[in-house]
Length: 391
Image (cartoon, rainbow, N blue to C red; front, side, top):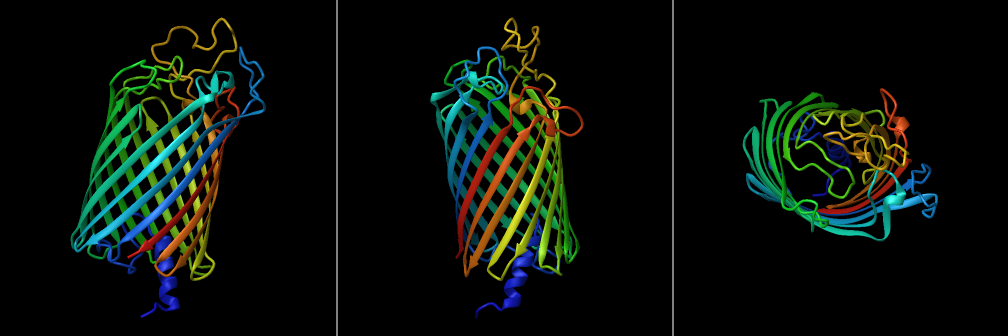
């Protein structure tokens, strides 16, 4: 029998307001296994560029006003198969990466665009979940391989809900083992190991409100340097603490849902970051929805990050002989803004979506102090297209 209009709208509301681990009160049993299988294809294209305004020593002026840096093309496939009180899900992705190879800070004179760099990453993951009356237990594994970097991971997650299904508690542990063999052979067969613990609680506050709090602590040991950057030497220990708060509210008067989240990050490199993200899910009809989004990110610099000194007696290295040092732009102090728009269409068991995001990063967008000097504006465009069907 075909679903009525009210049933379809109700499903859209439940999907729009849902947070990981629980649906709105009364919408569904919190730990029921999936009733349908799902197969989904995604294609992502990423491209970034950087202005050329700062003139460091040895700049020859040949790079033009902007430097096109990295392009990524990534098709992926996801499959979910229900098996009674069990489910099996897995995904695979192939990343094709190409572009310039910046070697030092945002100094374009240290970047090679011809021949540049090319790399291909193949990654996959598999998760098996067992559902119980008020809980679930999931075991997962993942592997990623590049020509100079290999990573393997394993995870275990448990969830349990209260009798009224309004509250869900979860705990997860994971371990990652990485092997690094850069082509420049600065190091050979280096290793990095990371262990992670996550605790969380999801609460249905009302039929229109859901909130979630999660806390994560990770311990990393091993090789954290970037072997392709000059004067990059980092501590061999990196521990991190992460707090995440999510809140979703459905506005019945306009049939829209506000999704909001805040994330705090702190690590032993000295980085402290704050992320605020909002999205508005607006069904335009039973079949079509629009989701604009906004994300703001800000961080201070790592304790061993150094700003380049435009003195040829020092450049491009750090002043003095510090134990640890890095001019990696990702470890600097900056702020970043991402604007996004997602369009989603439902036709029977089929769903297709298109998402466009535009990211810009600037030093002076940092909150709580000045950003790192001498970094040119960084821009990125991300386009994603997806197609999925239930079976």
